[in-house]
Image 1 (cartoon, rainbow, N blue to C red):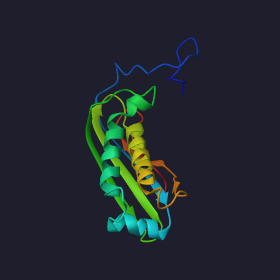
Image 2 (cartoon, helix red, strand yellow):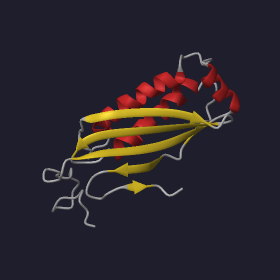
Image 3 (cartoon, one colour):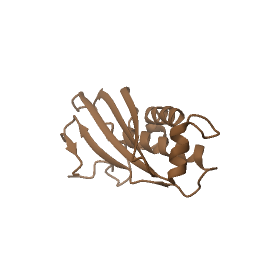
Length: 157
């Protein structure tokens, strides 16, 4: 596969998607925030002094997905048609964040999904850092994607 992000002078460029097919595209990304059990319990009980951590993180993730092209230089600005953020945990010390992002367009939404979970995790860290400064974010990864010329992808479990 050629290096599509370089021009004929070897400099970075935004890929030209003009001639690509419009297809429905979906990407799912996930990250983990590892913390003390007491920190997770405070989040779940709504006892964090800055407010409802998961509600704020959800909005942050949605906003970040919509602004991905402002953060990542070679990303195309996309009209996103759906963004959903889900939170689950292991009832101990790990909070899982999953983002599903959708569009109908000429390029995929993998970066938008990865940006969404990253921003949600950073928001959780920000809102809980008074309780715990050594929370760990990651791994952050693409779980799946569908649509487009390169076809579907599903992370191996």
